[in-house]
Structures are given as structure tokens and as C-alpha cells.
Length: 477
Ligand code: NAD
Picture 1 (spheres, rainbow, N blue to C red):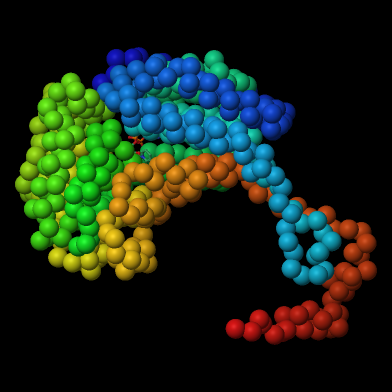
Picture 2 (picture 1 turned 60 degrees about the horizontal axis):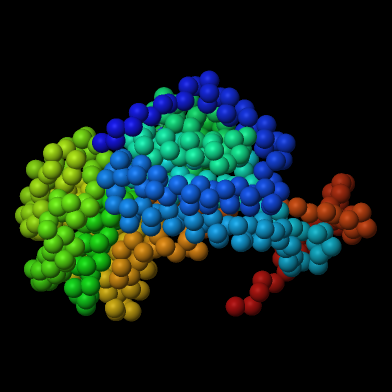
């Protein structure tokens, strides 16, 4: 648990900031590209000049190893560089190639205009990339933006508030801190877009509040992201990559491999490979100082995970140890059945259940019976197996032969499907999320002689002319 006291903003302060950001946006201050690039540059400096403080804050909140935090911040810096280099091109109006002759002179164009004043609500588990990442997209899009980080990571939320006030234009961007009452107040205000990252339960509350103002929402939720080990998989490499994915932030990652479907005949060999890599990753055990093994965010999540472990009918192969109310050792559980306690909810902790299956058909049936995950990890080298999973299963992302490395590909959209959310962000996709595509035409006065057929009175002759167009032959197949 963190020791930092986080001061929550008062409801009056929240309303004041909202009014200020509205005024700034209406004045057009955030639209010029030079302004956007300067603010993005400042965000980059914020990270680079405060690396140690940022690492220390999330270290206090989560005991997160510096290597993981610097990797997370690398995501912010990569996003800043990408946006500075490309924002002007992303925002360039697009002339539309019209196909029908009569519209050809109408100057059909799509303008990329900022949505306006936007709200980002973030979780505690990767506080920098999941708050500053959307913020940088909002800056690139030309929006003003409030970010509400999680109160469960008080040291990093407090630091982001202080640093953003110091580095970014306070008329345009603000970090507001608070818990449920403060967020509820924020949600009563009318935003032009809300990007929420967190649990499905809260996401539904956010979407329902946004609906009152018809505000568009992006929901980045979690869920149980499965791993599938196919018959032909390289078991040793799969074990190493799954254990590494599960180990990041002690399993508290939205794309953590949640559980593993493994061929029944290969479960023992897969466990042997997992144990080999377990010993290599944490040679002196996960609680030894050298392991830099992080904490569970708070005692109530610690108790939730302990309760799940106490109810499982699976067999613990390794781990299952606790360190007060702070840490839980990476824990491998075998012979877990699909309706086991460990399969009830997103684990969001360092427990890895292995679910033995008879064949691929059973795996696909099990996958399609559960909620749609943020990501599906499939270990195989068979083209046929890849195709089967591409065509017959659903997920936000499908990753072959690795875990979590999709996060590095910011050139691709990141987002869920159905239960794991809707909308997308990352790289240009965050810019798109905060951008309205404003269609534009300019109908020339000179077109008037060709428009007579649409005007009243609606004569039979005009009808026949229009009906002839409807009845014209379709393209040949
Ligand atoms: P959470 O839903 O509890 O909280 C997220 C945010 O919502 C916080 O800022 C919190 O203050 C606010 N909030 C909480 N309750 C609220 C309420 N009743 N009304 C209004 N606001 C409220 O989620 P969390 O525990 O911070 O994060 C863990 C979850 O987030 C996991 O399910 C994880 O998979 C998911 N997640 C998803 C992604 C993604 O990119 N898809 C990334 C990280 C985490």
C-alpha cells in the first residue's frame, strides 16, 4: 500500500477547471499545430526530466520494478515522438474521390476536427501509459482534456497532477484527483468524448452517465484473456513467454495471460517447462530482494486472490505463498476445470490456472462460451490452427506465439470487443478517437441547371427520371 496522501479536488474546483477548459477550447487555442507539438514536447520533457520520481512513485504504489516502469514510460515517449512527427499529416483534410459525375464539382472533403473538451478516466495498474497515453492523443487531436487517474495509486496520481500543472498549459489540460464522488460529479458534466479504462462494472456506469448527454465513449475494459497451447506448440518457449507475461506487474495487467488451455496429454511437460523458467526467473524465490517482485495493489485485492485460491479444486504446483497482505508468489495451479473458482472472474493477480483439454474443438467451444476477451494468446506454428482461431473465435487482439508484445505495436489499434470494451486507442488511433470527421461539400451555384429534377412540384416525369436511376442494372458479378 502507498503511504502518500492524495488530496481530492473539491466539486467546485472540478467545475472551475471544466469551465476554464471549455473557454480555452472555444477560443481555439488548442487547434494550431505548433501549439499541439509544443505541448506534446512538454509532455515528453515531463517524462524525461522526472524519470526517477515517476519510477519511485509507482514503486511506492505497487512495488513495481523500475525496468517495468521505464518500459511503460517508453510507451509514452514513443507516442509523443510519433504524434509530433505525424500530427499534421493525420489532421490533413481528405479530398473525397466521388464516383458519380453529378457530384464531381462539389469539393467533397473530410475535415479532421477536435471533438472538444474530453475526459480520460484511468486505472491504477499502469498509471502512466493509461493516463498520459490518452492525454497525448487528446493533445494531438487539438482537444482540451481532463484526466482523472485512480485514487488507488495515490503517489503516481499525485505526481502526475503536480507535473502536468508544471509542464502543460493549465488552461487546456488538467489532472483532477478523486474517488467515486468526484468522478460522479465529473460524469454529470457534458463532455465531448470520454475515454475510460478500467473494470467492466465501472465502465457500464460511465457509459450510462455519458448517455444522458449523448456523449461518445470509448471503453477499454478487462476480462479473462486466455492462452491456448496447441498440440504442435513449442512447449518450452510457450512456458517462458506465458510466465513472463503473467509476471509483469504481478499479474495486474489488463492483457495478462489469465489462464491456459493445454492439451491434457501435454500438461505435465508444460508444467516441467514452466517450473524450469520459474527457477530461472526467480532463482532465490519471488520474495527475495533480487526478484523485485511487486505488490498486490491493496489488502482487499490480496484477500480476493487468497479467497479464490482457497476455493479452487485445482492442485497448486508452485507458489501459493503470501507475504503479509502485500505480495503473492507466482502460483501455478493444474487440473483446473472450466467451472472452477479460478475461472469465475478476471484474476488480475499472479495466479496461473492450467485447464486441460481434449482437443481443439473443445477449446474453441470453451472460448466461445466465455466472455469476449481483450486478447487471445495462441501458441502454434500450424497455419490451419491459426486460421481456425482467426475465423471461429473472437477477441480484441489475437497474438500468436507470445504474450503482451502487442502493446509495443502502437501502429495498430488497441481495444476490446463486446465484454472487453469498444472503441480503440494507441498511436494514430487515439488521435482518431478524439477527432470528429466533419464532412464538407460546397455545391457550386453553377450546378443549378442540373438540379431541376429535385424541386417541387413532384411531377410524374421527374418521378420516372429518378425511378430509371434506381432500376439501372447492378454491376455484373
Ligand atoms: P476500476 O473500474 O475500479 O476504476 C477505474 C477508474 O474508475 C478509477 O479512476 C476509479 O476512480 C473510477 N471509478 C471506480 N468506481 C467508480 C464509480 N462507481 N463511478 C465512477 N468512477 C469510478 O478499475 P481498476 O481497478 O482501476 O482497474 C482494473 C481493471 O481495469 C481490470 O479489469 C483491468 O483489466 C482493466 N484495465 C483495462 C485496460 C485496457 O486497456 N483495456 C487497461 C488497464 C486495466
